[in-house]
Figure 1 (cartoon, rainbow, N blue to C red):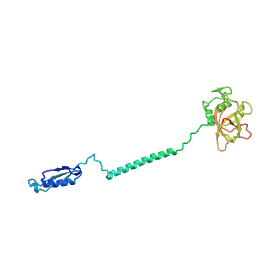
Figure 2 (spheres, rainbow, N blue to C red; figure 1 turned 30 degrees about the horizontal axis):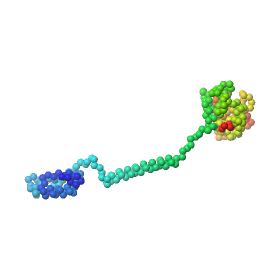
Figure 3 (cartoon, rainbow, N blue to C red; figure 1 turned 90 degrees about the vertical axis):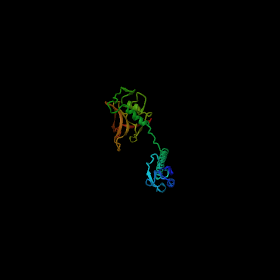
Figure 4 (spheres, rainbow, N blue to C red; figure 1 turned 120 degrees about the horizontal axis):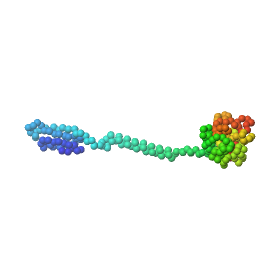
Length: 245
């Protein structure tokens, strides 16, 4: 016999009156169990028997799901709503950040930096440096101080000499305090054995008593070291700014 909510009922040896009572119990329904009804002792009149109604627990159906109205179901729904809200908030925040993000411009290598980069191609201060010579050439440029500077400035090969670098078409005089990366410090007086030119890179200290420079120096070759040319009173070294910087 099937009861309310699909419960299973087992009914044995019932007279009509007892069967009617059992049917009433079945109508009320017992969820999740089997109801077994037995009569009185053997040999008694079934009509006078007292029905004993017993529910026998039934193993739960593993495929059953909690009804939508149970606390567990409501909790699952609440958890899902919260997870969905967090996901939406994360997407919205990322979208706002993309719209308001200010991109930092990529640094652009200017002509002053290019002068320094070209100077480095002669491997200053290393075993691969270009040796000094007033008669030899490296990639078309003379390997003396003015040939090296001409190469770094991108001037035509084989390069100007020191006196030529002071020409107003190539450089202009500035004060030592105005020096910037890529500027020159030159002694254009004297002879080809005393004249010299270096490329200013940066100040070596806050007092400006020395600076870092690239140069092609005699008996050595390409170098990168601190110098103080032009900083002492009466020095023949003067500061120049290339016109192409």
